[in-house]
Image (cartoon, rainbow, N blue to C red):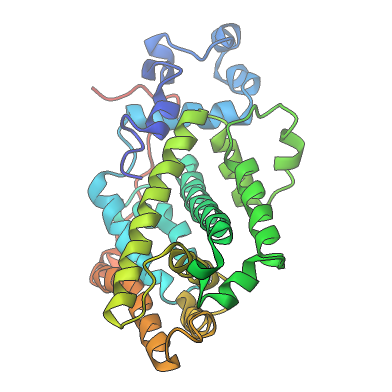
Length: 329
């Protein structure tokens, strides 16, 4: 979120198509094809704009006014929402980053910022599901001798409902995140989605295919580092997961931990490890590995706990400048 107003994909969506001066009538800038409506007055100009055009225009104006969170605020919001994730299922605390940023900076931010937190979460999940399916395909293509000891994991992905469920989730996330025209063929379908996903889909219409590809590639690389870290954890306990099936097992356990069955995935990840490592590790070792898995969520949450007092400091919220106000020099 720290790069929203910068050179990143959202920064380009916010300021790339129309000059930032287009926020102000005094600056003489207006979105394309709206000159006549702008000349007739702000009321008619707003009526002539589609909702997604208005949202994008407001986001550009926010960039012009520097009324988006900075890097320090975004970093604090990450740690604070990590604390929330310990008491919420499926890491749902991440969806509150926009609200936390507002509270930390004592000001309101554009709704597009909150939609981007949903977009970010969906893109992250898309990367994990995609990586899991690639690992599953690679594992099933390996010689049988190389899959030895992963019988339960193989049974899970060979002919079971799990691959179909992951494929369905991948398609749903792709439909939401792929750049599209709001008035195109996907418009009626996307409007039927839950409100937050629909907002993320509207935001996705302002990105390019290259932007989404960059998001996914970086996310897949980061997930690969996570899997390597967890393979190091397992190696410290004498559990060898340095293989394609081992990485698939770790990715599967992470997905199980995201199911809304327990707080922060505690218990569900441990049960999945005991089940999938049967024959390769003793239950006690599998449970200890589950504790190490959970420690990855606890450490940033402890940092976030020290920042919670910032949310309790009483101060009035300052509103961001209106969309039609001239940027301050």
